[in-house]
Length: 415
Image (cartoon, rainbow, N blue to C red; front, top):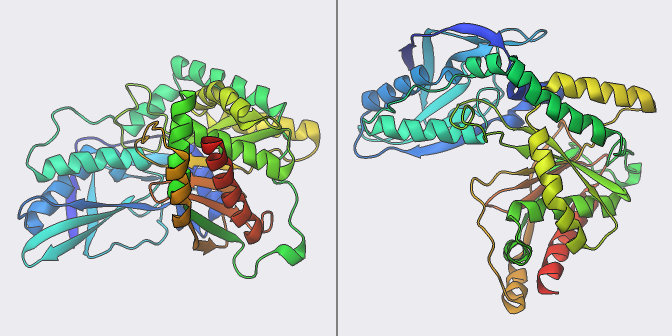
């Protein structure tokens, strides 16, 4: 089953900064780049029939050019916005396999039905078209369309964002970010995880594994620390991840690539596109966690500003610094707070936190062959996960890191 769409606009443009960043990550992760796919489930209000729901999907694709945009070519990539086409729709779950970036539309749609009524829509997004925040914009608009109340203002376009980024104003923003990358690259180690683990410690099977720590005690501690220090929970977690990474690796300066939404500007707030990019966060280690946390606030702001950058500038800076040292320079250490809302500071007592530790669990939900990083911490509503290359950080050390993270935060909160 297909949805035929026909919009008023078409065109070509270079990739935006965010598209270029995720495309580089895709190339370094193939053929396991399905890792970057993500999904959303949308409850359909009322008693909408299949034709009614397909009409809303049609309007969504016509409204947001990102879903009508494919990769122009792989060697010299650009974005190609199409005026019209056919979007396949399935019943049940859409495929979660990797996207064909040049031929396939970057949105997959599945319908869940009960009789003649559609109860839910299942959407699978290509990360080249949208990030998590962009998907939320699309889901919000889809809900309005399902209710028969289409958004009244035109949607911003990735093509226009690409044009602005190459304007004089865009170049000034990029130059400010580039100065931060250049300055910090002079200070950081070549990598946070530079040496492969001894062969005896390496895991059998796929080298990439994910460990997920579900810890209500950690959550309570983070919120309590945030309340005591006047910080966000995200800053507390970023500081703890960086401090502990430095302790585990013996680095005097911990360098972490933190994923930033880049939706602080009016022209980026509501665009369906990939805007999330890496900012460079650095933290001097070897101090108490309270001292590290005080330094983390200003360092996080600098990192957030550096995330809105031209990947070509970053490539140039990394290449120059690597040539100067005679070895590749890359932190290979990432942090991504994927929660859509900070739960906020809230004091918790030692007894409450202590009782919650009995609920801590650790599981291994993912393994695969390729990943564009060696150490990635993700924060979600499920918990804190560590995805790592076990050739550099074996599974027992991954597990130890996550339990040490819990110990550090709980100890700080109750001590």
